[in-house]
Length: 412
Image (cartoon, rainbow, N blue to C red):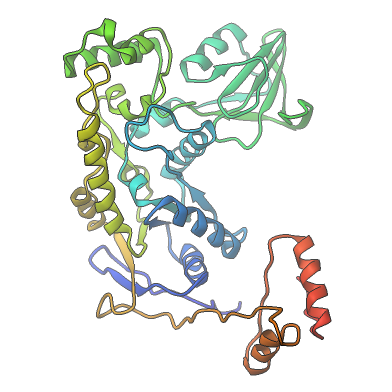
């Protein structure tokens, strides 16, 4: 087996924190993909923001290939106390990741630091609200319709996105949270006769499967019992007039008002955080600037709370009930396997990985022969060079440009 291009020395215990100088370009993703192979459990990469998380996820997936899974736990992409809810696909990905994390043995999870600070539903809710439907089992459509509605699924005329379901005669169309495709469940009397995936655009059935797993459609329960408990807690916590509180009335009528996610703690006796979902011994890799970003997020959140906390018709939970503070975050991180990326000179014992920025090699420049800069680099560079593009069409276009400059690369 070939030696890794970059291999980081990993910490052996929580008392042995490692410091690494952040490498240039995609070398960071290459190093983290290798860490995912080397570490005996999950590697959790904490980034400064959502943009950095998305970029790093995509790059790690390229280098990890099929032997190391790269997971997402996306941010809601809403600001604290916004009056709208996250997109269904975001919730679907989050619920699917929360369900899998406790039993995951290896992989790489990339998470923005503000998302790591969030207080979440307890593990018992996610695990206890899942269900498997299998071919040959009995299924009462009336009971299932009520159960799906209680789990947060939407009864719609046609299934299009995660969290939708539709009943037509002896057919149940269902788009489970966390699933890449919807399923069509066909009944014979009250027995499940077949389960097939289908295309939501054409509505045509596709592949047969033996079973499908259903995860909750929200990160909180909205059963009749939980809604009643929510209303009682809301009255106990805040001096509201229920008749003038839209939030109270919407929940009473069985709805899920926009922005209800920022009242999640009122649905549970206690909350947990992502730390509680992770398998041991997870390795945390703290990206450069991530902890500073947690301080900035906390300050911004406190300011938003002060600006909005005086609306008696929509009382707000304080930041401490929705997030870990930066101090609490640091305390949790101090007790885990951990490595920090720092800038050059950021720590006296930080290990430099010996990378350098890629040169600028424009294919055309006024007054020069085509690809002159690239030809000069290839003549001086002692190693091999890999050129990557984002599609087969771009690859063919690049091959034509290089051929015009007298270069004929091998294709992969």
